[in-house]
Image (cartoon, rainbow, N blue to C red; front, side, top):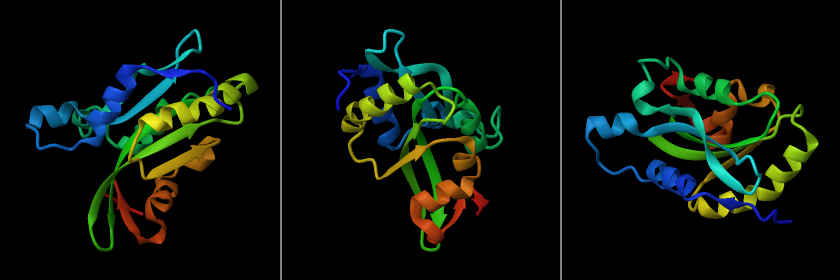
Length: 166
């Protein structure tokens, strides 16, 4: 069932910027988003980029030690969100980067919030063309350990995530 919620243009711009890895200057690379959260607007009619809920590539090694742990800490414990996480990982054969679309719906979120986020998920997914990995997470236990993301990305063939062995 569609909820009638629309996707703000800024959300699509953020997705396209994260998806396209064109050769860039070091300054441009530092401004690239590693992770970003999306929420519903106050009137619940639009999916928007959540203010100040992002990690930039340039933050890593500066204000952010571990991008995955920092990303998990951005998630609200009592409400739903959509997120994009730009995972850098290695398999036995090669190094890879993939965007992961995450639907965060913790058990403790209000039922009404879970319902509207669930019914609006298709609206945002349709705009995110070419996403290979989608992950619905229902609590911190499902997401806090980066090996769980490793399994989502490729099961036991993933040997490291964000430069850390799994």
